Length: 491
Ligand SMILES: Cc1cc2nc3c(=O)[nH]c(=O)nc-3n(C[C@H](O)[C@H](O)[C@H](O)COP(=O)(O)OP(=O)(O)OC[C@H]3O[C@@H](n4cnc5c(N)ncnc54)[C@H](O)[C@@H]3O)c2cc1C
Image (tube, rainbow, N blue to C red):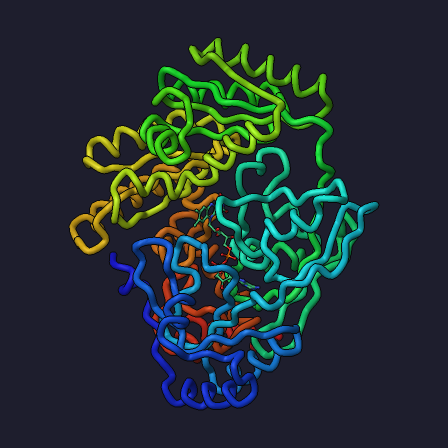
């Protein structure tokens, strides 16, 4: 089913017109309505069509976000938070128009607490900015998606990256946050304590909510100590299956890998050309170990032995920072490298995640599917978590190619769900995966999510048209209204 069938939000023309006037007068140059800037604030990273907002506001404080939200709430106009716009599922699109709230000017680091290993930041700080700031403290923030995303956007999509196998995802690394709700009030979800049993876990409710419940205006994050020693390297394998088996054995034996990333032969070809790497064009594992000098050497040797058991090697590893950084830069640039396999093409990036014991089976079936459908679709993944991406390269102007790519994606998502996994390990549902949420958590699961949404945002102004199918105006769908009525009756 086409995206447009799953996601139609009526425009509230009168409300939008009024809000544009109010915000222009209040924010002056910090409120923009030019076409180019509006398009930049719609979806730009994959083939999903761009649906620009009607205006873009650049607040500098929580109070200013509250003002914008109140202006929109009073007129039932959608508000869509914008971090750096690197999300891949159409999450920043404005299907019913409305106001994009660009968080880039809320980029202050508010406090660092080295003894407690935490910090509090505004949402527009990017992960690289935070790590540059932390460099002299001996601490770092571990979550590293391939893009230099904002921390607010990363929390909102429950992002992760190559380090998640050791340090977890945003789910595990946000201690607390403050968000502006749909009525313009604020909520702070917790404190700096490492754990809490105080009622519902509101922090985790907002982490992964994709801007549909509130606009995050500050976050308290866990930090980690920079390890004394780091070693890492690349290990080629004769087949993808053998590489997967080596990953599974490494995790099951409890070797504390910090990163273990799988790259298939086609993706290796792209990375070799793009980053000028000197490795064979065969499936490879990129691995890294964190610890003491002796610890990382021992871990690297144990991994090399496991890899050899599964036909892998030679495993060339190093503790020299420049060489390691070059390898990880190449890995982080995998998305851009893959686009060179078909210059000018659009892409559809998948991100299923399965229990680690099913990883080999899932990847092998997926490679067979790619061959059967005749697609160009390199594979790269955070294999230690059972999470991998296929980048389907296609002519985004050709409906037949889009249909084929979507069919592949649907089969892959169903495969992962059949294997007790998820259709999205880290990119979120946005618009692109709306058709798969019910297959994942069932109709009742979707009902519960809608009930939460309706309780917090009864007029559906917070990033409408995302996560589950929506048809109707910004005043809410029939189902939303049903939930509001039910809640009212219960209270
Ligand atoms: C090359 C490349 C590699 C990538 N690799 C990874 C990867 O390894 N792992 C991974 O997880 N992702 C990856 N991504 C996807 C992307 O980087 C993440 O989804 C990231 O978390 C998005 O952050 P952002 O700041 O760009 O958010 P945006 O794209 O701006 O927004 C994403 C969503 O968050 C909401 N949002 C943004 N800011 C706020 C806020 N302050 N309050 C409430 N809601 C907000 C938006 O409304 C939207 O729904 C990659 C993307 C690219 C282009």
